[in-house]
Length: 504
Image 1 (cartoon, one colour):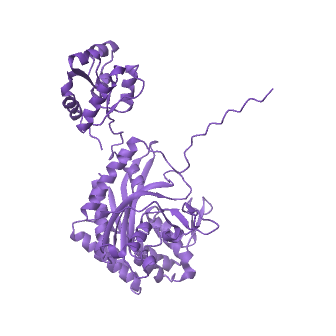
Image 2 (cartoon, rainbow, N blue to C red; image 1 turned 135 degrees about the horizontal axis):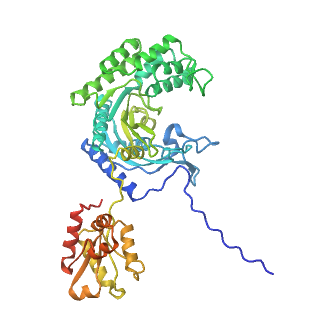
Image 3 (cartoon, one colour; image 1 turned 90 degrees about the horizontal axis):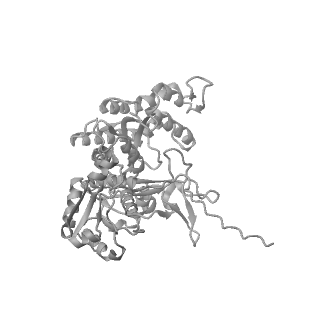
């Protein structure tokens, strides 16, 4: 007996780890955000530019893969002439390549914005995706602290345009030259101290989470997570002396008045030329934002801001949300940083061989969207679907299509029901699932009278919620009315206006 042919195996539908599918509600919320951010950036004179999602890997700087680990941090592949290409890790490195390649044709300073997805080949986890959206703005070709001050003011204005109230966010500003001055003052210059410098910077970065005494342990021998020796995990410290740890904390601790922060940095970095330059730049930024009416409740000098990327060369900034909220399980959530940036004077220079100053700011759209949704500042409902014209008589599809065309020509989103028209109930269920504001029905009797029926689904849903009896529901036939066929567009407009239905 011959073997039965094996049934072909179904392909299992599965989403790769670290990625997400997004439906109409999430996409609508992103669109709202992007348009508000774009409006602020354009108000400041920035113009759009788009760069591709892939770049030659060497253009991404420190993320150049080695032959053994070509996908370390980035998603990379070789093209047919064996050159390495990577999906972009951020939006700044591609901009640097674009400016360098088109340097002579662009106005300087060159002010541009761009948004899109970036890709990280990192281990995914809660809130950590391998693909997420950023929205950047950069000024290339100006070394003036005014360019940095302007970015900070724009960041503050963007938060308020997105509905984050004053006092619920702060733009924190520091300068990598100040941090370089601190490292110089405690004798950690030179290549041989690179690892300890990184440990010190990581310790400073914890000032947002830990009290100064806990950070002091990270600057010294190290810290136990449990608070006492032998409890929890141990994090090795930078092994600084008490005197050097004091200098680090004296410069980087938070103060209520930016003048006090500047004065402390000035004192402890008196012998550091790079530190003094950083202090002067911070002072200039503070004066510029204050002169434009931005108080310390919006933009604040904070010497503890480190920023992670190695290419920052001067002022660095970070936007922090200050509101505490709760997740879906009722646990407290502090969102922290939702955007940041800084000055990166060396990035374009890699391509040009000459100094090209640049400064920029990036909003983590995906992260900020999650925060704004929790704070109730985004409409996360799916956008209303189109008006659905139902098919009552199969042989009159042309009549129904004519109605659809009339609605579309009037700028009203509309569609003809294209499923099996046998069951009117299924057509109405379809319209409900499409979140349609209303449906159009015309049987032979209505056609003979030159009329159409309009069923207001929004009003119907409200009435259904208020009516307990099925009999009462049938008797009232809520939110359904007739009108002359010639008045179809006008009457549909009335329904849309009554419920403030807008698309896009």
